[in-house]
Amino acid sequence: MSILDVIFLLCLLCVVTGYAAADTRISVPNELDFAEGNTGTIIPFSAAPSGHTNPAPLYPSMRYQQVYDASQFRSLDTNGEFITYIAFRTDTDTGYGFTGVLRDVQMNFSTTSQPPDGLSTNFEQNVGIDDTVIFKRGEFQFGAGYGPFDRPQGFFIQIKLAPPFFFRPQNGNLLYDVRIYTYSNSLLAAPFDAVNTVGDSVSRLIATNVSSQVGATDTTGLVTLFYTTSIPQLEVLRTNQDLFFRWWDQPKGFVLEGRTNLTNANWQLVSTPSVYNDGYREVTLPLDTSTLGGFFRLAWNPPPGSSASGSSGVRTRHQTAKAEEP
Image (cartoon, rainbow, N blue to C red):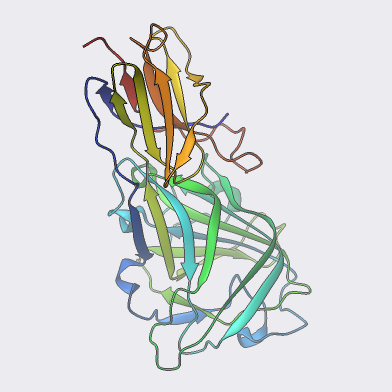
C-alpha cells in the first residue's frame, strides 16, 4: 500500500492548533504568470496543420515529455505539497476559441533528475521512481474561449489530477509525461502558449508515435499553471474522557493510524471511522488504556482504483502524536 506519512512530533497534553491546508498557485516559467510566452505550439494537444481542426492529423499518435525546473517551485513548503490541478492557456498571437477532445490519452507525473535542456532522448531514462498516472487513460475533453484584447489569455484549459501528485522540489525536477494513443476522431485544439528560450526552466521531448522509445528534444515548453495544497496538519484535543483528532479533508485519502510504540509495533489503521464535518475529518477515541501511551499519525492512501493505489509510492515525513498521562 502506498503511504505518504505526515509530519512533526507532538504531545497530547494540550490543544494542537491546526488549519486548513493552504493552496498555492504557481506558473512556470514564473515570470510568465501575467506575460505572454514568445511562441505557440500545437504539441501535444493537437496534430492539425497550424492548429486548425483537421480530419487528417499530421501524426498518428504522440509521446510527449516536458520537464519543469525545481527552482520554479520555491514557494512550496520545503517538505513538499500535493499538485491538485494543472492548467494551460491559448496562445494569443495564433490562437482562437475552441472545443477539443482527445479520444485516448494518459498523463503521468514523476520526479526526475534530468534538467531542462538536458532531457535524455530515451523516454524511460527521464522517468522518476515515483512515476504516477495523474490522468487515467481515456477521453480528455477540454477547450477555451478567446479574448482578442487579452494578453495573455486566461488559464482556462484545466486538468484535475486523480490522484494528486506529491512533489518535493528538493528531490528533483518535475516531469510531465503525456501519451496520446491516437488523434483519430478527435477535435483538435488551438495552439497553446509556450516559451522557446535556451537556458530557461522548461524543455521537452517529442516522438510522433506513442510506441517510440526515443524522441527529439528541443527547448520549447508549455506555459503551465500549477495549483498545489499543503500536507494537512493533525489537530489533537484531549479531554477527561476522549481523544479528539481533526484534519483538513484535502487532498482526499488521509486516514488516522496508531501504534503502541515507535520501536517494535506496526502502524495500524484506527478502526473508528472518521466523520466529515465542514471540510474536516474527525475521529473521537475513548481515553483508556488502549490509547494512553499510544502514538498516532496521518497517512495518505491514494483513492481506490487510482494508479498509485497499491504501489510503493514515495515516503515523506511523518507526524506522530503521543497520548500521555498529565
